[in-house]
Length: 509
Image (cartoon, rainbow, N blue to C red; front, top):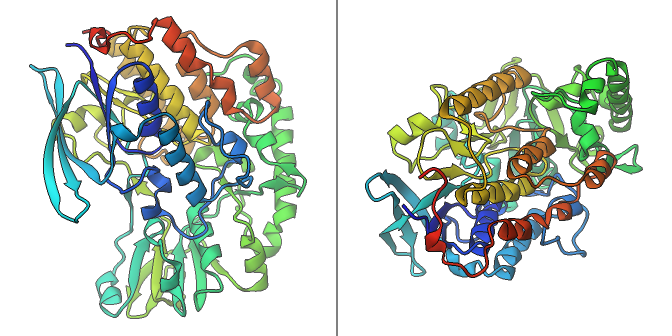
C-alpha cells in the first residue's frame, strides 16, 4: 500500500504546484496535460483577445517564485503562461510533464491499490497512440473551467448553415476572424467584457448581450487607489459573512454592522460615480455587497469609454431567444444582425475520465462536488482534487492545497470521521447555495473567502502564519511570499531529505 508514484491530471496552477510540492518531497510524479503547453486557462489554445489577470502581478504568483519585475501591473494571458512555463523549468518539472497527453480513463484497482490510467497521446508527427499508466495516488487538477458551456439556441443549425459562427470566449483565439462581421458577445463577466472590448473596432459591430448586470470594480478606485489594497486583504473578506465568524468578524457582523455597511456603501458610491453607471444605464440596481454571491469582476480598460462613445453597444436584461440566417432575436423583442456569437457563459466542471461509480461518490445528484476541504472526495481511496476552488488567489490556494495534501499523505493530518466529513460537505454546500443563489460552480466557488480557505488548510497543518503577518494582511494586499516558508517547514516536519519515498504510506492505510 506504499505511495511512491503520484499521477496528476492537468498542468494549470493546481497541477504544477502539486508537481512541485510532491517532487520536492521525494515522490515520483507524472503529470498529464492534453494541451501542447502548460498553463491551464492561460494556455495558448484558449487565450481569447484581451485576456489579462484580475490580480495585480504582486498578488498573482506562487509563494517562492515571484512574477518578473518587468511584467505590467496586470499581466497578459501570454505573460502568465510564460511565467508558468518558467516555474516548471526553474523547479525541474519538465521531465515529469507529458504534454499532448489526455487522460481518457481512470479506474481504481482496489486489490493493487493503484489507479489505472488510459492516455491518448498525440505524437510530434500528428499520429496518436493509446498508453496505459499506473500510479499509487491520483490528483485531479483539470480545473473548474475545464469544459466550455455554450447554450443551445433555437435556430442554431440554420445560423451555422448560413455561415454563422457560435463559439465560447476561450475558443476565440484568432481576432482576425471577426473583421467586417457583426459580433454578439453573450455575458457580462470579465471574459465577455474583455473580448467585446478587444473586438470593438475590428468587427463591423460589437454588441454585448447581458441577461444580468453585476458590479464592476475599477482597477484604480477613484483613479488613485489600487483596488488590491481594498479587496485583496483580510479586512475585505471580513466585510462579507463567512460560514463561521471569528474574532473581529463577529463585531463587523454584529454591533459593528453599521460600520461595515458604511464602508461598503462608500465604495459603492465611488465606483458608481467613477464609472458613470447611472448615466450609461448600467447600474446593477443592487447593493455592492452582492459581489460576494458569485464573482468579483474588474473593469476592462476602455470598456465603459467605448460604450459612452458608441463604439460598443450593450443590451441589458435580455438574452438571445432565437438565431436565424444572419440574425439574432432577443427576448425583449429586438432583432440584431449577427455573424458571430461569442459566449462568455461559463464552464462545466466535469471529469469524463472517471468511472461513473466514482463520480457518484464524488458528486451529489445535482452534480455538486462533495469534497472535504475542497480537496478530498469522501470515502474514495487515493484520490484528491487540487484547484477546485474559484478565488482571487487561485494560484495560492492551489499551492497551499498541494502542501496540505502532502502533509496528509505523510501522516501529518488526522481526518475527522466519514460522518463528520459528510456533515462538513453538506453544511458547506447548503451555505454556498444560500449565499450565491445557487451560482457556486457546483460547490467549487469560494469567492470572496480565499484567505479564509488558506487559513483552514494551514490550521489543519499547524503551520498558519504568525500574528504579525496576519495583522499586516488585514490592511495590505496579501503577498504570496508570506507563505514561501511552508514547504521547507513541511519537509522539516517529516524530516524529508533524500529518504526513500517508498517508505511513505497514505495516512489511514
